[in-house]
Image (cartoon, rainbow, N blue to C red; front, top):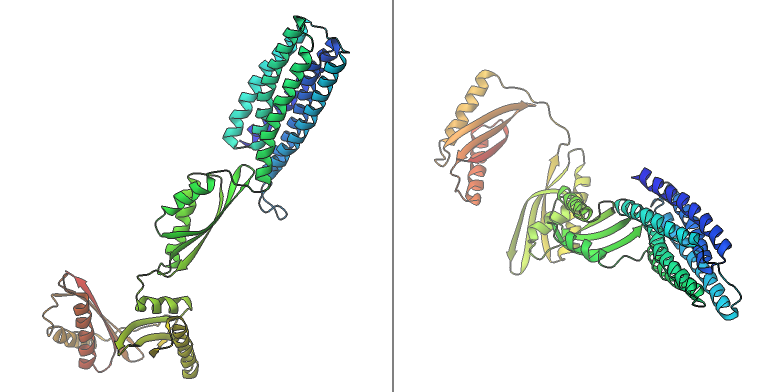
Length: 454
């Protein structure tokens, strides 16, 4: 597509050069201000097409250290310069036409080649405006679109000149000058439209409806609570989108990232070439429980906690939890960590809280374990089976693993119970099973019970 843009831009330069020379020669031979105005118009097209050609080459360059947003706005600058040329040329045409109407000093010669050159101009302009429009739409190039607009206005202005020549041939005085003024007005109108669009993009004015469309598709992305800020900046053939969205702070970081990615894809379904930056801001929601708030506060400050219990007594809250602290820390350092977390919770949830922290050592590296002797493993398995028989709710033991480390034994017990058992009841059962297992096997360091629904 980049090669297509350059090819049509270069062909436009060649066509403009040919028509400019042809109109200039015929205009000088006939003395027609209408044809000369068209020659000036085509000369402007030549300059504009040349600017467009170089602008297209530069705008396709990738972003670099000095142009971190790319070079896309070069096309808009090109279009703005074309606007200035349009207005200057139109002013000259109107001045010359009015001068001729007032002085009646110039006679024009009507010849067949006067009509031939204008008809040739119309045919060429129709062909190249179609090609330019097609490539401009495919590449979303404003510079090529501006060129196409130029040549569409050329078709109309050439038609006006032909009418002026016909009226002049019929002996109507001043027809050629009036035709030139008509051409100039058409050129000014086309230049105004082109200039306004160019200036809008250069000052980062977003086209109507773009922000609303982006906000609408983003609001339908699952996980977005609301859009906090949305900024859209046009540049070259695309947009830069900067958006801040609110998400539930209970979501994991991976889920929040997924929401951002989904939002980008939704926007790119509208504007495939858009450069999008999504900032997801986690916020509290109304249905958060105090347990969830404590867990979020701890997580946000890189604390690992579990077994959170909140009790209400006489309008006061009593909070307890287990805090995992690096096993390499001293008691003084671990206590300092626990105190910092308690102060953080009070600062966010209120001072009227009684907090009890159970500090647990956390080993950050894996531990090498050993197998038990066959005789010892058999004895412990039998002891575990005796304990399990005391729980009629347990239907089947699916796995029983034993390991030894530094003379202490670790056991994992996987067993089935009824799938409709309430979670609280299931947790109580597993806790009792762990306790009784440790009681039956004195050398047991830890028992982990995993309950599976039948």
